[in-house]
Structure formats: structure tokens, C-alpha cells
Image (cartoon, rainbow, N blue to C red; front, side, top):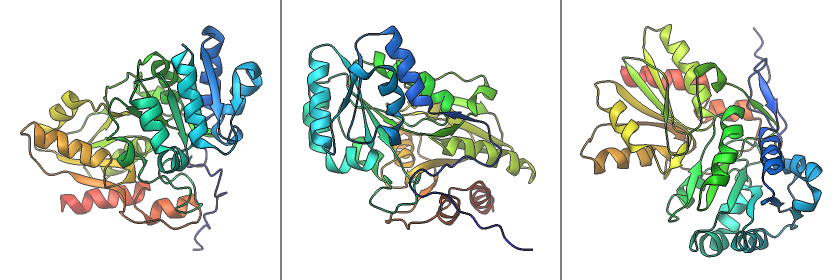
Length: 327
């Protein structure tokens, strides 16, 4: 049997499975919908309107759209100034540029004065095959230490559509890990509603609990179905807000004899896994956590399906890892 060759465009690659339901540009449409209701909403980008779905907003509200060019520090400085005078800016760029290149501006211009600036980071984690220059595999580790910064890692189009107005209503700075283009639509099947700072148990199970964020929640749900074929009863808890983490829910689901694993589209260093482990230790609920995420290394370039399988983010690799841990 000839194995199907896995290929995707490296820059605008989609992690959606073949035949999966998707929604086009949910962030751009959600922001435009919000702006139609609130005159203070403005959009900015650093030469990446098309690649962060900000072009949808630009077409609807050209007078409230600002193209700052390839100058991420300027992007954040301008957004801070707008917030100072009562506007509510959404500033989009790639996550690698928001974190590595413009960290000082984000920290001192936006976070230190506690301004309502909403940073939208494209290509988070392993969502492009362009290699380390564009793969933001450590953005959560960099930003979790910024005081007062809210961090959201949405699973799908439903999460994004509901998160945008919630972030605008949040008083301080926020960082949204953007899923762009044709984004899978999954959570509408689970009676789910996004609530800032809250996790949601999407599926119950008595043997294993998978605590996940971002696109890994849809992989966790798929893995749970496949694990059922091995008679493994698996719960899935989605954590769309990385900071502040829903400590109450984490402690509740950890208070059992079930195997506990975290799933994240991020390095196993400094992201969801370490946040969950820290929560357990600081609340005297010490127990083991199996971290499923990207390795602590710079990743290769290539087709997304191939890379996800290579680095352990594919559904089959998740199932294999859980079965190995169960022994």
C-alpha cells in the first residue's frame, strides 16, 4: 500500500483535517462585527493584514485601520497611545515578532501601565512549516511572566468569535494566539461557551483526563474517541485561558486516580504543562503530569501534517503516548 504524501503550503498551511467543518477568517469577521457596535474599536497591523485576517476589518472600516509597516515596536507603541485616549486597539502581527522582536514595547508601553491593548499573534506554535524564524513555539513561556497580561489560546472558530468581544471588555492587556484562514469549527457540538479565565470539561471519563489548550483540544477530543476503542475512558478539559489559569477546575479534575496529561501546541517548557504542574504543587496537590507538547528544540521546516506527526501533536501520536503511559 502506497502511503499518501502529506503536503501543505508552509506559510498559510491549515491544520484542519480533510472534510472537517471550517469557518473562514473568524477573527476578522468577529472584530468587524464588534466594531459595528462600538466606535472605539480600531485595528492595526505590521504589514500582515492579509495573513492575520485583519484585512476583513480593513475592508469594513478603512478609516479605523492602521497599517504600520514592518515595525512591530511602532505597532505596539501606537496601539498604546490609542488606548491612552480611550480607543480599544487590536494589534496583529506574527507571534514570533510580537514576542521576540517587540517584547520591550509590549512590556513597558502596554503592560506596565495596564492598557487595554489586544495583541493578536499569528502562527502560534507549530502552525507553519517555515521553520524556527516563524514558529512561535515559546511565546507562552515568554509572555506568562508579564504582569497583568491575559493570555488566550483558542481551540477553533467558536472560541475566537466569542473571545474577541470578551477581550475588548477586559480592562488590561491581552494576547490572543490567532488561528487564521479556514479555521475548524468543533466546539459548537459540546454546548460550549467561551468565558475568560474559565476551563470547560467537554467530555467526561474515568481513566484519563486530558487538559488541553488551543488546537490541541480538537486533537484531544479525537484522541479520546480512538482511546475508547482501546477501552480507555477519557475526559477532555479545554483551557482556552492560559493566564489566568482556571485553578479551581484544574484542582478538581486532578483530585482523582486518573492519569493526568496536558496537551499544547507549544514547547513543553514554560507553557500549559508547567502552569498546571505549578498549580498542583503550590496547592499541595502534588501528583504526576504527562506533558504532551513540542520538544525543547528548534523545529524543522516542512509540511504541517508531517511535522505534527513527527513532533507528537497528531491524534495517532497522542493515542500512542497515552497508551504507553498507561502501560
